[in-house]
Image (tube, rainbow, N blue to C red; front, side, top):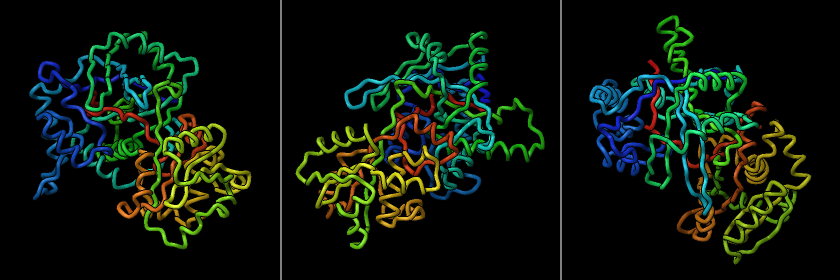
Length: 438
C-alpha cells in the first residue's frame, strides 16, 4: 500500500532567517492579490516569491513568474537562505489554534509519499480537479523541481500508534512560532532508524485519503510522466516518484472541517417561486423560522437539527426555513447515481434536491460559476440576504460542516464530492519544509 519515506527537506536557515512568521504563507489557492502584495512587502525572503510570484508587464516564455521563482530558489540555496538537511528524516508538525472559543491541536507527520495513480487505490481522492489550477502548478514544478507546500492526507490508525509516537516529540519541538492569524506552529525532526522502520511498516498496510491538495497531487503525477518520457527510464527510488505530504490520523482531535455556505444570485422570478413551503415539503420537513429570529438562534437550531438528520437553512428576504430531509427526499437521493456515502452528504442533498431539482441549476452551471457564490461566514451569508439591494444575493443556503469520516467514506466509495464540500481549517503552512524532486 502506501510507501512513506523520509526526506532531506529544504528549510529556511536559522542563521539568516530568525523569524519564520515573516517568510511563510498559506497555500497559493487562498492567497488574494492583496495578500500577495503584503507577503512581498513583509520580507525579501518570503516564500511568496516561489509559491505565487507576481506577473510582470512584458513577461515572456523565457522570463515569467515561474522562471523568476527558479532563479530565486537557486540564489537562496547558494546564499544559505535555504538549507537542505544532511540526514533524511521525518518531521513532526503541529498546528495549535482556536476556533469559536475552543482550542485545537492538529498533529501531522511530514514525509515523502510514493506517487500512485488513482486506479491503484493507494491514495484516494474525494473531489474533482480543474485543468487551470493544475497547469499553473505544473509550470511551477517544471521550473523549480520542488514541492513548496505539503498535500494534506489522512490515514486510519484506530489504535493511535503513530499519534503516540509523534506526541512524544511535541513538547521539545525545535521550531516554534506563531503566524499572522495566531496559529502556533511546531516542527521537530526525528531520525531514529527503529522508529523510521516502524513508520514505514505501519503505512505499508494503509491507504491514504487526500483531504486538501488534489491539484498538487495530480500535478506531481503529470510531472513524473513528463520526466519519464524525457529520460525513458526512472529508477523506482528517484525523487520524482514522490510528493510531500502531511499525514494526519483521521481521528485526530484537531482535524476541523468548516462548512462553506452558498449564496444564490441572478435567479429568475420563476426559479425563486420554487422556494415555497409547499414545494420544499416534497423532499423536506419544513419549519418556518420567520425573519425576526436572531442569526445566532438560526445557526443553533441548524446545528441541533444536523445531529439527527441531514439539515440546512434557506434564507430569503421574505422567510427563513429550517429543512430536514424526509423519506421521500431520501428515496430521491437513492436515484442520484452516486454512492450511499455521497447521498448522505448535506452538500450533496443541497445540490441534488434544491439546486438541481427545484431551482434547475445544472452541474454545468455550478462548474461554470453561474448563480452561486461561496462564503465560510454564516453571519455574512445571512446579512447578505438582508441587504439584497446592495449585494445582489437573493438566497443564502446555510450548511452544517461535512464530517471528517464522510471524506474517507466518499473516497472509499470511489466517488467525488460536490464543489466546495470541505474546508480543513487551518490550511497547512507553505515554506516550512520543502521537498526537492531532483
